[in-house]
Image 1 (tube, rainbow, N blue to C red):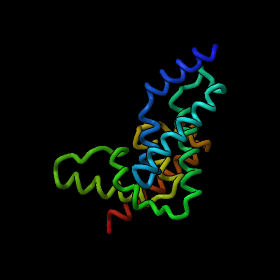
Image 2: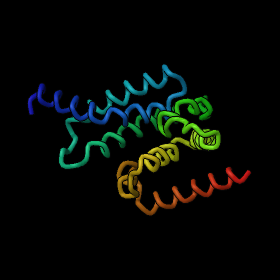
Image 3: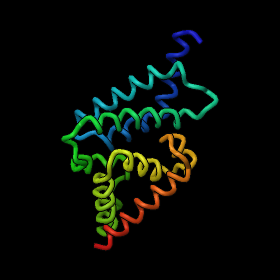
Image 4: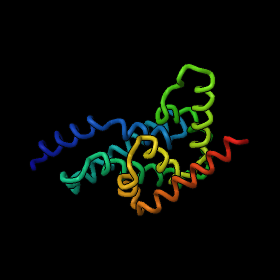
Length: 165
């Protein structure tokens, strides 16, 4: 594939799945500037890795894997990050408030819960809430399906316990 065709293919695929970059950056960036920087770093890493992309595999799975690796690496390198500032950005991942006070409160509690998770579990919840199946999540995160199921169940138990209080 020529350089121009490769560039065009990358841009078309990235444009079709731009929400992946935006959502991952929203979940891991502390501020608007951090989210923009993270979006740029994810995009740059996707471009660098694109020559090795196997078109027989789903682009979203490949893109999520790279985006989450970049974001998790950035989160691990930032010892000041405690998750609290991701609360506002979590709306990009979970969705807007639903209108009723009860739904708004439930969404706010879910956002707070996700913001308090470590980097790997935030990635897991993002993919779960995006309705990826366990096999897709395992492929993206590079873990077994059993590990995904176990981690999701533990996060659900933790959420239930928190909601009971």
